[in-house]
Amino acid sequence: MTGLDVAPGSPFGLDNLPFGVFSPAGGAPRVGIRVGDHVLDLAVLLGDPTFAAPALNPFLARGRGRWVEVREEVTARATEDVPDGAVHAVGDVTLHLPFEVADYVDFYASEHHATNLGRLFRPGAEPLMPNWKHLPVGYHGRAGTVVVSGTDVVRPCGQRMAPGDAAPTFGPSARLDIEAELGFVVGTGSPPGTPIAVEKFAEHVFGTVLVNDWSARDLQAWEYVPLGPHLGKSFATSVSPWVVPLLALEAARVPLPGQEPPPLPYLHETRSWGLDVELVVEWNGEEVSRPPYREMYWSPAQMLAHLTSNGACARTGDLFASGTVSGPGKHQRGAFIELTWGGREPVTVQGEERTFLQDGDTVVISGSAPGAAGGRIGFGQVEGSIRAARPR
Image (cartoon, rainbow, N blue to C red; front, side, top):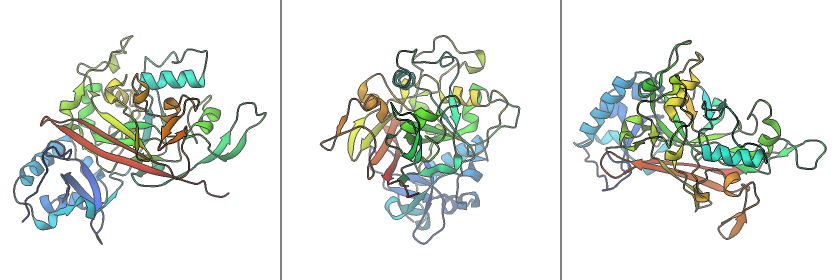
């Protein structure tokens, strides 16, 4: 039997308990919970074969009652002696994509980000479209290109139309960017034709992950009219390996900054699901931004309510993301196109002036939030490195 040693102030204390999928050396992927610098094998600890699966989906589908029950069981067991076979050092395991992604939708929920991009993409026009403050704008992405942190990202190719050119050209993106986001994982779905009300958010959404929605801005600028993002977004979206349960984020709930005009009744929240999550963006090991999720205009409960308002079903394993998290300050911008103002205001990274991503660059996004025990809980990190475009 093993007693768990958790350092004081650990971002992975008992008020967090994030879920992931790991494999020990020579073993098959299975579900675990992180406690301090340990990963607990839940199939061994709890004797539940649901956790021997290579993805969280079977557990997620069991619903909020089981989510609460498992959290209580692990909290109780982790303070006692734990069977040796259930404990692994986090440095000795391989982490995998934690859930099978059923569908992926990305929103555009930051007023600061949307305003900045509107000014960059449509200079001289109103930065926000007329619908933006009436509904959470989003697009449908590709579930098959969602990858776990640590997966390399190959520079995408596509059509781009350079200023002054008479015709588009095809080739590697020259304006490759990041988007620092928070993602939400659906646990229990909904049948077709049955919208999910904002007050039912926590019954359907299990938890949160960090997201980097890699973006090829030159491809995006040429293709996005009239139907929105497509190849400029669909090549890769990275997520963190640990899913922080909503049950761990109660202390992080905050009001939204304010919505004017008031949203329509189906989007009205009695108590907001705004979240005080702080992200940190590092570019080749140097911190360049701290985007604050508490500044988001639309809450995740409103996003899910809007996503299903037309009768579209939600499914176990659905991922929907917030869109770029940005605040009012330059140091709070969650995309390099904003941070460098379209490339016209370079930032200094490791002594070099930089605008967009170069081959070999590595971006790490981390996150934390207030925890119930008075400290901060961690989301871990989502990391990706850029590799050269593949020859055609």
